[in-house]
Amino acid sequence: MPRPVVAAAIVDSLSDPTMLLACSRAYPQELRGQFELPGGKIEEGEDPTAALTREIAEELGARLTIGERVCPEGGQWWPILGGRVMGVWLAEVASNSQEPRAGASHLEAKWVPLADLAALPWIAADLPIVEAVVTRATR
Ligand SMILES: Nc1nc2c([nH]c(=O)n2[C@H]2C[C@H](O)[C@@H](COP(=O)(O)OP(=O)(O)OP(=O)(O)O)O2)c(=O)[nH]1
Image 1 (cartoon, rainbow, N blue to C red):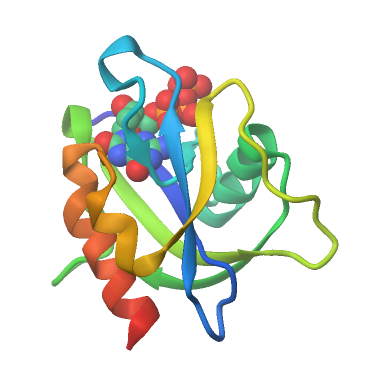
Image 2 (cartoon, rainbow, N blue to C red):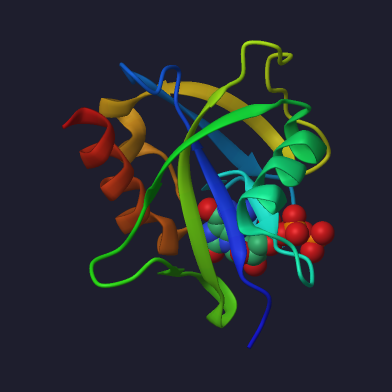
């Protein structure tokens, strides 16, 4: 089984979310320009939310306050590309953090109103995940 992935649905405010930080991948070529939730693979023996904190620091130079996990029906892990599974957490930028910025992993990291997210070219596997994030954030 390939390593699981963890990703952050970073919203402008956990208590009153209106926008999400959508990130477009720089690589590999076949995913270049497609949007994703930023994150990455869990390392051997690593706690999933520790992995998420590490990945967001590496990729976006930001610290997170992690909120609720967003799960698919009947489980905790979403099926994604390459036979992997992905754990997703709502999060906001911590008060002591720099603003998240696209580094080498992303072409772009931009705040998008929740109502406009569906129009972005997401990695296909992310579409139901983003829908669940929006449902959770707007309930
Ligand atoms: N980060 C992320 N990966 C996703 C999403 N949807 C999806 O299918 N994937 C896939 C793409 C990749 O095959 C895999 C994650 O790999 P990654 O390249 O982000 O992981 P990483 O940062 O640990 O990368 P690396 O050091 O191995 O290059 O999961 C998503 O929303 N976010």
